Length: 432
Image 1 (cartoon, rainbow, N blue to C red):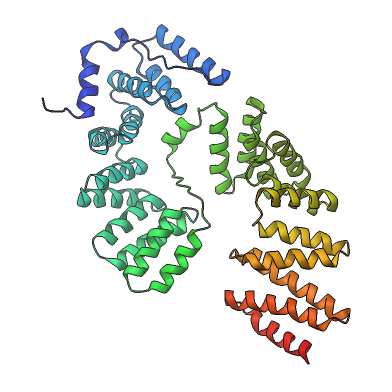
Image 2: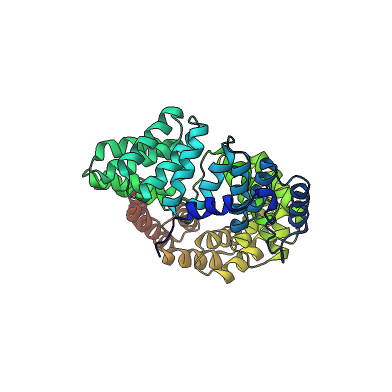
């Protein structure tokens, strides 16, 4: 028997019985937050009262999708599209879910949606991506180009054009479009990586390596400006979704919105340390050190070994002048990660502040042996080694001072730092 495409099966099922006669999808809700269960129960009640209302089915589908009940959401969107065939939202949202399973089966749904609203650029991008994944590159190129015409600031449209140009061997066009995508979405690692490949393909390997190296510090963020899809995610009432939305706002500098999401998530479930830690980071970026410190402490109390929280708390305590607390927390961070050079530097700073020269030198030596590659950390180590060296010169210990300057110079030369020349001159002066 020949397999039938998923979309045909869905529409065949849709025509088998009136939507009002269909059973309302009822997902398994064990382990979900009470707010989620309450919201879904309310929408189910709305459907029982108006099972022939397409928008009621669509709203229920959005809530189901928001909480990752994908199978049930597909059923709900299918009924919404059947009952409200002139509403763009329902075939579009259905297409996006089908796309996660079969790009080929999503194509007629994307086209049906665009037949209702041909000016929605994100839909052209998603259709183009599905066409690209199915090897229909010329058609994909046309859709990306249309999205870029409708919305010149759509980063994913330019990225798609750049990828296809790279595949076609047109390095110049690839670099042009991917550079634009990177300008529009500097936080997107995949855009930067593909741009690096384009430069390498064009023969500028050094530029490609520079861009690729910079991309390593980027998170795996793939934010896209798609208000209709975003409206689905905004409905999610679970703690993880609050965190995800807050991170998206933070990436775009919307710190007040990020705070709002995190506080709402904490109000929902105050036992989640990752929400408190994220709030600490947002408050620090917002210029609220006291609030940031309090949130970090809450995160630490809930989960002392949560990645990043101990170093963050150590730095926060140091900035507020609590040297004892900062030292204790930095030592705890090093217990969890003995190679954390930034925490070694903090221990060295506090030890130097207290006049403990032996410990300061010992910790800096450990940090030097780790050979930190992160530029700010490496520069901080170079500066501390230099400061300790100068202090030793003032104390009449030129040989010990020279040892500190040699380490600083070694790191600076390894990094190709312009500070190397000055360190070399200073070391020569000390040796006289």
